[in-house]
Amino acid sequence: MSWDKELKIKQVDAIIRSLRPEKIVSRPKGGWLKLVRTTLGMSARSLGERVGLTQSRIAYIEKGEEEGSITLNTLEKVAEGLGCEVVYYLVPKERSLEKIRQKQAYRKAANINGQVEVHMSLEDQSTSKEFQNRSISKLAHQYLEKWPANFWDIP
Image (cartoon, rainbow, N blue to C red; front, side, top):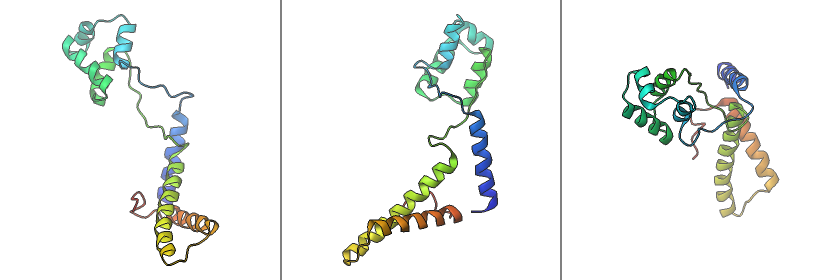
């Protein structure tokens, strides 16, 4: 892997670690906009006036957030009318982007090794599980080192 890619993944992992909250909070059932607006005791009409939209448009936007079809620009505009700001970033389900990359390298290596083993077994030349694991590990490390263009492709 080139130093540029290695440095970039370390830098982004560090940024994500610094932002990661103690607990990830899911979007409320009705969406954040409606929750904050009703908690503030603000009507959809009042919010609409604050951001230059109609009451029905605010209802449509809140429904869009609930369904997951709202754009970030719209979310930011309406959040501003609520005196809020949108905080947006991705949190890896694995501990880091590097872990995601390692998992992919092993997945790709295991897939390729599995294909080879099928052909080997057809020729009555199957290898031991221990040999297969060593082969997968060696291939995965090669993928991690070289990071080829087809890295994310599973054959």
